[in-house]
Length: 241
Length: 241
DNA sequence: TGTCGCAGGATCGTATACGATTTGAGCGCG
DNA sequence: CGCGCTCAAATCGTATACGATCCTGCGACA
Image (cartoon, rainbow over all chains, first blue to last red):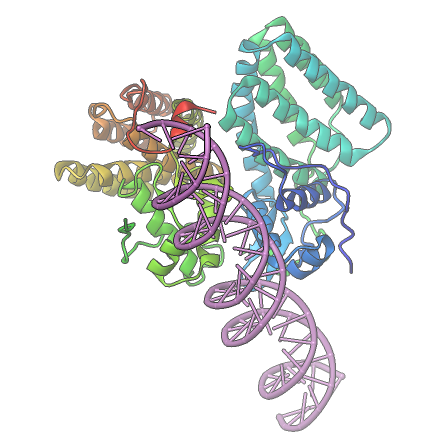
């Protein structure tokens, strides 16, 4: 069972402190990340070191580093002496992630209103357009990914590096959660983003914060958090610890 | 210039998912972490892979993993082809960390009030006693470390794994910040903790949240965030990017 | 005398090698 | 026929090796 990973990848390295050449590790990391977030690799999928290494023409050393990094973000689970697997967030994880997002993104939204600038608004509107297009084309995975990037862009506008870092992780986990526990499309999600940008642009802080909170709540409510057979992976995880 | 690291260390592995034997990496990780947080290793100190490796009798492979992990938490900075250094949080970092803590710990406090139980309160009071003792003995580093652990214990009581994880990182960074930007002791910090526990035990939620917020604000206010010569390390960092 | 260039050493990045652990299949026995 | 045991293949954990990069100190030249 080959992993079917993309060879052409987008650069996923957001931590380019010195703006160096995007290292090989960053490329592989980005490839794995998007592959997972676009659901080409389902939860529980084994991520063998040798397999990935030979796929990208690097040694296990590099792959191990990438997997450890992804594990730290909660996208991958590493079991000692067994290997790495695509994470399968539990229902409790889902609750916690969305609770944290509501808390942090409310603060981010308020900051974004304060620091809004025409250029920032323009970037948001461009994002909106990309999202609309993905939705129109029925590309669900891309829509989820773009929607996530919208939230990160907001954090960037807020000018809060720490929130941005935390949210980057939470959004990635959210994407995984959305793809696993998907029940129905949250209605008018793009409309939410739209109205949010409008409120931010107009400087209506409390309205914007309320919209964000409501937006996240609605996404969470649209999840199906009941019993999950989620066919075919780690039994121990299903039976609980 | 030897690193002067402790050989006897406390187990720092909080992520014992399978409760396995605390691996060698965890031991080294814990040793480095406490050494940094107790200021035996100052900001900017070079953490050579070979040096640490030979100190603990492991190969660079292990050390690299540990350093990468610490880097992900913002305790260590890794510069490509140059090595790892104890992080030197900027003033902006300090602001962001404490802003995030105020936000998250307010939520944690509210949760802790909800889920309080006699056993939990007892653990908090035991912590209080340990803190008082460290303060009495004038062991500043230990006092800071214990004070941080108090906050993490609170997150544990709140029963929110994600908040606990995030706070563990933020508290570690806070400790480093406190040790760097220390100006004066925040007055009655232990008294703050004391009153906080009282409010939690009595179930006075809004008072507890207010105390926590005030507590963190006061710690932050006690920092000296002016110009920093911080003698003797990376000039590039001082001159900014 | 001060600055520039150039080895030499130290340190990091990556690949590879080898022992340890897990897993799954085959086989014998109840 | 099912259950447990043994052993081999696969995979991971760790150490080591080698090439690449960076820092340092010394000497030549303006």
